Image (cartoon, rainbow, N blue to C red; front, top):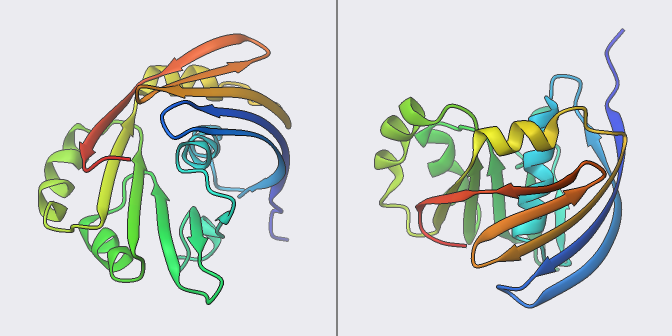
Length: 179
């Protein structure tokens, strides 16, 4: 019998001072059986970082033809394709052909991946890549509750997430492009 996705209830108070976005968001997100808590946390950070009212979670791990997140126009065009993790250069090139804009929020041990992939995709004009600090992400994602309540503030490109354990500063490093 196949394992089922685990639903997480999310209450996100988003204050993005850089873009002038102030939203109180409530939604449910599914965690794939093979997905780590860190990857789920990165998807939530990406949701806040590039929030738009049309932004939606894709099937991601369940369907390789869909991203972690995407924003579609009313006529079905993909306006913004958002990946998380460490995809290869072929995947990023494939994504860039399917969307007007592609963003990647990379995490984990990035030294080898960065040297192999970032240089190979520098020519893609519609791609931006940010990296999340590993230690801060691990602390934020540790023992993630099924009912997530985050207050997230983005100011001068730095993320601050407040949860029941306190405030976490999540450093971002832009490897290619910008937000």
